Image (cartoon, rainbow, N blue to C red; front, top):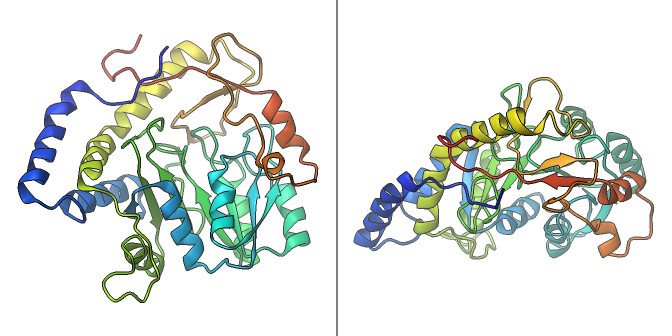
Length: 326
């Protein structure tokens, strides 16, 4: 199964109609399609949303709003380097947490240990591979009880749910990526989701240099109208894409790969990755093959993270069209 971006040919005409309207209006940024994309994402994810040009801009916004400069932020080592780099570029100190071997996500036991050691201002939890971190409710409750900010890295988690609850709703904010490889893609793009109205207003100003009154020292992280139009089309397709992936996994993969990530009752994965714990031929590789604490030369031991980096593989699972299940 070759990599394909989940985009239906029949949507091309509608997308071109959107783009024609953008060209006709001469408003190529900060227009109707950015607002429409945010509305559609809010409706699907049940959270208020602010669009960005990329994941990193949305992450910086949240960290800036919560004022983590000079403070410690805990982050799982089993993640993409963008997650800890967001802390570093925001002026914070990053320390790493171990993961679980069952879901590849943040370990509650390790979190408790590192909170006691570092007294962090905030915690990143990363939803790896398309599913929600199995211990997310316990993690969120612990952070609330200790008044620690919890930010969810939802870069993989499009279409995931647990008993109908969506990623980004457990903590103070969630950050999505729409990079080219993601289940829902706009080529480049990001979305901040939250029910914190002060954060949402801050985000709208931060992405646009602090306009209109420049009380927020923002940067340029605006999403173009052309990108937002793709996001509108893709969001309308998300149920088809995630449904197709789940049906394909059930019919063609689950019976072949018993030693895989097994989801709790009520959880639906968006299947950004289909993760197994046995070597396979024609694997698409690892989710991450080098933990972040090694990249940044942190000299402490995270045994589960090291085990995961060596003992998981990804089975190809790419959307091939809601009418072409094979």
